Length: 597
Image (cartoon, helix red, strand yellow):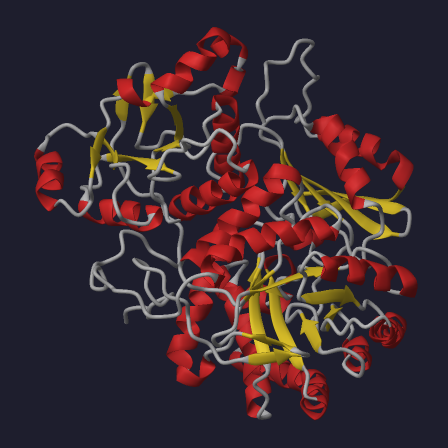
């Protein structure tokens, strides 16, 4: 059976129409704008700081604020936080973030406008136990979950508040893992189990999310969820909350968020978003606002669908790189099993030619004008047929300044071009002529367009032409490849945003870990403030640094804890020792290459 569509139209923007869900005085889904939210970083028991952080977020445009409630005691304090906000004239909706403790959810639901529960740990435990479940045993587990979840659903109904059923890739239950594996399908099934219980009780005021730190996993999970909702029926049109969890900080965090969130928004998915940065949460809001701005400004009318019946050149539910033949261009191999290459224009190459030898692994690999690349309008079938008739594999790209969205243009090219030919992706079809253009806006647009196509499996080389400065454009190109998991050229970090569950200062600690390890090319390190998503999101990390108790850190190799209760003051040094024990350590070079990352 053919999978139903994963979005309204993969060729032209058309926002998925969902039912409307009220979150306090904010309406999510339907014809409402895509909403922007964030989360507090302080201790939930610190009432005054929670109030001040919330007010600061609202000042910069945050529309919904999430606060962790790890215990019943924390959940009770939400009453005081909410009261204090109302006394200050602030009625922003508050969301209680719940993990592990249904009792805390029941307490929090008395005081807030929305409760977020994680199906992976609301009624299940995670002990990494391998067990085969018979169908009867599985049904018995679902009945147990129903008993735990039903009281919360009924309370939310009585109070008229909403809920987010938010699956995290890093915290799937053992039961789900044993039946579906650590997969997007497992994420979707975990959420649907809880949604069916809610629907059986006549409750529909909920929103879904499918978060992961890996953009490819996150994108596939949301697409699969929408496909499954379409299969379930027209009344399963629930809104979506988008987010890449543990995105990190700085440009890396913004790029990874744009790849995951931006690519889904471009396909018409998403009704509310949160950009999760390892920074003060007020810095998340401008990034989120920039990501949704172009879609909130669009006309709500249904656009034309000129390619509606054109088959997709990729499987939206499973990542697979488009197969091409290897091409040798001026000393560089691309296509086939080669890495995705980084291209630069001749004019920008000339600007940096004098320091190419100092740029190490971060220099440009292809000069576009010397590559023999063929630029075409993907709507011109005769020209593409001519290319396809050439017995030799070619490098092909989309012509600049044509009237097609960038993602649409390259998807259309990939559909018509024979697989043996390689594709040079561009971040924009309108090269920048503005030296003063806001770089963050360029970063988000480039990461969205290139990231979406790379995660579709399209592309053998990339060219950033939305940024004039050659150093900036090269850094952005390499960072997009790194964030999409396509090419690792520096240490890779998975770092969660801070919240009230965090057991150490994430920003300071992340800085210390980076200072000690940033030269370890190809090593992936996860930095987690608590255990909620720790082992799961660290599944493909080499080493993990996780808060185990106040002032204490546990160190992981993969998803296995190997060192426990290390005093925080010693933990970074012990992490370095652990990396050395496993043969992954190298000393910092005396004279490092000129790094543009």
